Image (cartoon, rainbow, N blue to C red; front, side, top):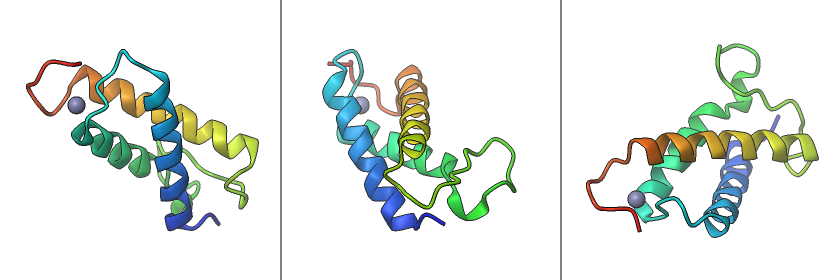
Length: 93
Ligand SMILES: [Zn+2]
């Protein structure tokens, strides 16, 4: 199974890549942390197959293409969710 720490590191990297890529979303620390929290909640390798709605990471190789795609998809979903409903009142940049 993928270790939680390794997964967290990978997810952080993916979020930073996507944040750098998109200028239509808020990339403040608050939103970053929200996106990270949502992504990690959805990606639960330890509970593979047991919880409905979770994305199950089957590969032990965190850098496999399929794992990267799964993480990327979840991160994009999390970003959309946070930006539709940001936890702060400031205007988006
Ligand atoms: Zn923000």
